[in-house]
Image (tube, rainbow, N blue to C red; front, top):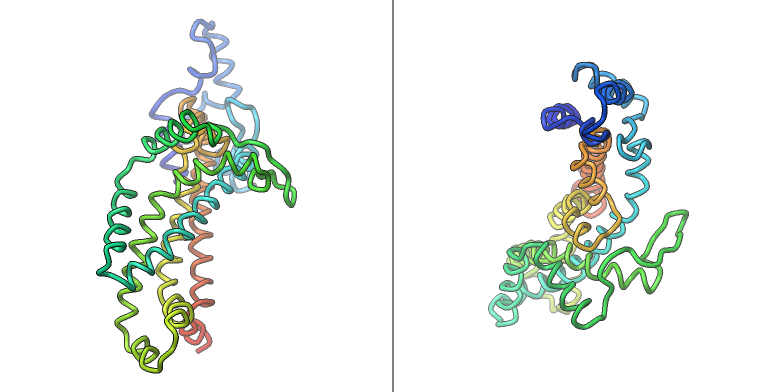
Length: 306
């Protein structure tokens, strides 16, 4: 990933053009190029980057003059809480609706739920965000237009989820980000519910006269959670990595705005550090999913012990 991004940004343009005035003298332009190490061949620049990366140094931002990892760590909490809020909304709404649709496939409410899920997948995020701002901020005045609102520190991390003003600010961007995930969770849950309800052990539970709620919570839910958790974990990574549009619309001060500014200004260290951070995040999420498999499915634990 670092190799691809490093050389692609080198092909796109010269960061020096963004750092100096176009009317600057050639000597000044050359000095800036030399100060940032951009006067060396690209393979030498990449080798120097790799040597620094092995010690945890991914370089300094050309624009901000600070370590790229420090900038990412500074913006990450805002994106993380936005992704967590969106994931909570998607799970809290999508899971029960999907189970209901799977248990009652022929009801008109199910047809309404599935039609709405198709709509949720089809609506562009940027259009929905603008419509939400027009309706809930401009017309009704219920929610603030942009920003993160009032924040407080919890366990040393700045968060807006523990203040009333912060919650008002996070409602619209989190809902906008969660809409596609709600539709995805509904469709996955419904498919899993219909599949499991046809299995013999569910029919046996029904024949024993177990209450419907117990069948759903004790026998159905654990068996449909594994594929859902797999998808949700990966989608959580995409919420963090691709919240760029939502953060731009609502001026949310997270990683999305940082990466957009860095791409526009050809701030190579920040772009490469961001993408390496995202790759590492997906690797960690896949590891967490594998561990959760063993927690949720006893068959995985037993196979491991053998």
